[in-house]
Image (cartoon, rainbow, N blue to C red):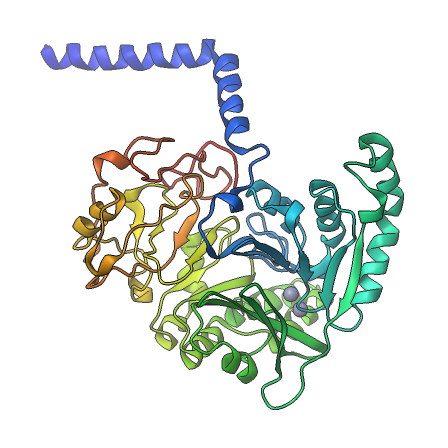
Length: 471
Ligand SMILES: [Zn+2]
Ligand SMILES: [Zn+2]
């Protein structure tokens, strides 16, 4: 009898809640929208980041149609400096949604001139122009031929620019700042095929000649800032030059094409009477790196972490990650991540304590960077006490102190290095977050929590990432 009453009570409550949601849809929607606007519109999330080297993945995809990944695009914030590497289709919009300071972009670097790396360049130039009220065209640096590409985009967007100036005024859309100006990066020569092309304010950028024949030249880039580094492969097969230039890097962002999957697509296209598609699928096998190649490169370079991007073929679910990786985990013992769009990699400068929070957006999803790749989703347990101390602002052994991450980025920060002395790996099980960190959208004693509404267009079944503004 009591059970029946209890069940009836619960059913009644659910019914009342459902009725409330139904009756107040408009008010709920208005409140949700207001909150999203407050938290996102006009926000420069990079300005909230601590000093360090941060990579915003604005496009982890390839030329293939991909519902989840924009074309190749990486935003890099090094201290106060802001650059973008490649402008693949949809990448600039992704940047804008992530709160990347497109108005502060100092330069765009192009790895090569394949269409998938430049097809949103016009849009990026437009965003940088209006977003930053630029008085000078945006510098676009790339291999020989970049001058033609930039001239073409300038011509294509010229008429649009006149409408912008007429509508928003010259203070916002200054004609003098419209478009881009090309800078040719000479192909590096010599045994290592690497050359420093920028060294200022602690930011050092090295260009690396990689192997993407018949695309010549094709570049990778290494970016160093205050003892931290990331290396971006561009499009390449296994490249000894890239490996040499990536020595001891913190994060190697390497392109990856899974040849077994692509061969299956080739065979299916051939069997269905689509010889052109079959030919293209067969051809692309020879100028990209497999996940295994990328893993070997990471091992040879002694990279601390490997992030695969320029993912071919599209992976509609992370359930396919293991199949995509193939034998890569056997070739590299460090952490491997198949990149997703709208994640941010933080590498804080000068040896500060660094922590990473998983895509669940709360401390239950706390992951330690530095785990074995097959354990990369394992959670800290033994280090929880240390972590609590860190979260609460206490000083740790060795004098380390937690540098609070941006409260709004937590949802998407998925990796960094946990450098608490004596930290060790923990068995795979969930941990309870410190009570102070459980509140949503609040900061307690410097504890970052999931203030950004989680993502909505990925992993609809995973916890903590539903219903909100996409980063
Ligand atoms: Zn390419
Ligand atoms: Zn490409």
